[in-house]
Structure formats: C-alpha cells, structure tokens
Image 1: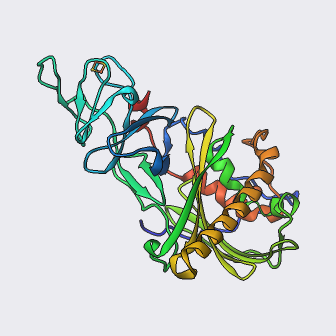
Image 2: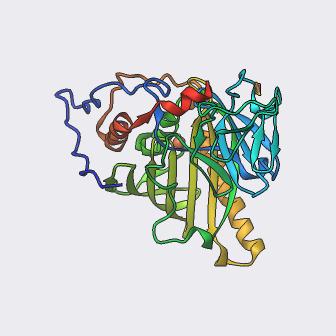
Length: 340
Ligand code: FES
Ligand SMILES: [Fe+2]
C-alpha cells in the first residue's frame, strides 16, 4: 500500500482538552465492515476433511479444509434454500450442503447438483481470500487483500516459534475499542501499573496501520521498550524488550454478532533462543503476561460504553490519532451480505 502523509498533531481546544476527531466512528456493520484480515478459527479446529461454522461479520461463515490440505473460508448459507453448510460434508476440495447435497468448489461456485440441474453462475458462496498464519485461519473482508497479515520488521516469521490461544472472553464492543486500549497510555499506568519513562516517540501511519514506540517500566516486570502497531482496525502487534528479553505478540479481534468481538492472541520467540523446552517455557511466560494484561482490562471492557462524542485530554494524543485512523479506514459491504 502507498504511504499516507504522517497524521498532523491534533488541535488543542480552548478548554485544554484535545479536540475529538471530527465525525463519528460508525459501528462495524454500518456501511460495511473494516476491509481487514480477521481470524475466523484456530488452525487446530479444522482438520483435513472437516468443516466448522462461525459467527462472522454479523452473519455466518464456514471454514473447511479440503483433501488438498488448504483451509477455505466461505459464506455459510447455501444458495439453494439457505441451509447452513457447517452441517455439510467436505468432498475432495468441495463443500456439500446437508440438505440437497449441492456442492461448492474451491472458488465458491456451485460445481454439482445431484438432482441433475446445471448450476447457474449465481449459485455462489462468497470466497473470502483465506490465509493460514500463526496457527490461525484468517479471512480478508473484500474480494482481494489490500495488505498482508502483519509480521515483525526484519524477522522471518518462519524463524519464530509461536503459541496461539483464543481469549475466553466475549467482548461486548467492536474490535477497535479493544485495540484502542494499546494506544490509551493513561490506562497503562492506572490499570496495568506500567509507567511511561519518557514521552511516546516514533508515531507512524500508513494506509493500513498506525504505530508508536514507547519506553515503559513496571515494578514487577522491569523496563519495557515496545513498538506497537495496529493494522486495519483489529490487529495488534508488539515488538519489544521486556525485562531484557525479546517480547513479540499479536492479538486480533473479529466481529461476530452485532456489537461483539472474539479475540485471538499469539506470542512468539525465536526458535534458536534455546532448547525446544526452553523456547516453550518462554512462550508460556509470555502467554501468562498477555493474560495478565487482558484480565486487567476486563472489568472496564466488559462494561464500557464508548461514546461517540468522547472527550480526550493531552496524554491521549496517540489514542486520538488511532481514532482518526479507525474513522478513515475503508469498509467493505459485499461479503457480509453473503453471510446473512
Ligand atoms: S439448501 Fe443446500 S442444497 Fe438445498
Ligand atoms: Fe489494557
């Protein structure tokens, strides 16, 4: 994607509070959904020849893995009478409906009708561009991916061991509200007891992402030098050093039913950082730290009523830039229409 100009510093209102980003942030589903990558299932949930159904984009999707081993995400409702294909069967690389056994091929179009009719071109599921990365099966909300699933600068992701886990919480908010947390520097001190050592530096923004660098410290965990990036409106990556050790993590949220998000997390360690057992122990330690942060946020995130006329103060500069990024992020309507 082409780089957009760096976001100008926000204007300060006469009151001393930051002027909120103009225009409201529409809820996901209003005017489409963020044109981003969304994790839909854990890779481990979908073996060869298996299909699972998921709430996705306020509708329903299926994830199946054909005989070729490739995972595919499709809209879930059959174009014949609307049966949910998650109750269907994988036949080779096709998915067959449980009701009258219409079969849909790898490109999403109906390939076979057992009753003998010739399939019409309109008999088609939405073929979400699908990728499998970090133990997750991702779908792009659009016809063509506009950017890649993020990784870590200068690191080959194959050189990283990872540990994926799905968050047990159902978040009663859109994904952007969860990830606004990582640019909300005031709450880091109040909720997580992480103190900023120096002002935030290195803001950057392009058409797909917004990021910043910060140096924090904690009595329990030591210093934390982190580069945080939000890609789309729903994918958080952090590349940092925590207590002297490299810490890389990713979290990504997916709109399920209106106003709700399912979140997945991944932590990473270099494969050559020690014996396999040592690397696994590092990953477990990082997972525990991630869960500690996630749990700290629950009392607020489970009850928050994020206001459209939100008032921001001076230390909210990063948050304000992020909200502007979310408001301006492109949306796509078509895939969700297939999923309803
Ligand atoms: S509803 Fe799927 S084949 Fe009839
Ligand atoms: Fe938090």
